[in-house]
Image (cartoon, rainbow, N blue to C red):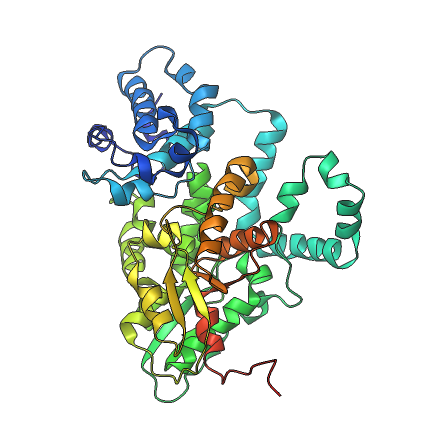
Length: 442
């Protein structure tokens, strides 16, 4: 078995042995906090990965047998939230290791024909073609608007097929898709302070069109010319996290070609998961590959929108928003990109907004890409704990910086009846651009 069968850079011996088994990662790991099992902790998973690596390295007979059900179960139960990286004193790049473990699983593990076909379509084809996303969104919109969803819920059909909990995570599909705005350029309000390219992502264009529009309004209000490059596509994060590394590399190639880096001061995104993936494009290619240098430059120009605005400084007038707000750290913003203060700085800039800290904000909410679909029970356990802490703050609004987290937390407020709104930080800034109207006044 050849190590280079997985495309791109491959972890080496030192990447695994950097873990010194100190245990400082344990309390940071959501799955270890849930089950208190060493095999579902970062150091436990690294040990399992290392055994597979050793078998491959030595060409040991039966190395493929190490990719068994137990290994797959423990690796797939990981949220890849990377909180362990923040806690680790030795600099272990856990996210990189778990992505390669999942790539090894995809290469060697025997799944059912149906499971493999579904995964191949979803991670190889679906995200690479906007028409697949639009067609699926129209079908789900019909399901939601026609009353079929209400009927399926009412007669217990979803529960019968074990889909009731997953249906609760299904977002409301937009009436108008943001895909129609891709290829446009938006002029700044007042003198131009920066020219940026907006990375719009994929699923957000059919369920978060309002957030996309709000992002452009906030950027232009603060003196930014915003271009939305036409040929951009999915960032590749979900494919990379699932072990479909070549699919992620192909999506990266398409984005590298779509963005004329010399034309922009920055590439900005409002999705923490996308931003983390874009900033790590250099990890997808070997130094000798032709894409490597451009991937490094692309990564260096990519900024989360909160990071970009906090550095640029807000110049647009913000009006009073007398709300109590708590902030949930998005894992791939805090742990993947190491950005903590920027979103809080922007929230504090809104007059009369009372920002209260959320206990254990650094622990994952359970969204984690497709985790709430593939590991629904664990996701719901994490969400229940998160909503208990959110309720304890007395906040009217829970803010976060990633669309996936917004969806998860909105499901949580509904399930646990916390009577709280969930908004992206940028949506709060957008609302503060206009005078506050009290609906109970008069």
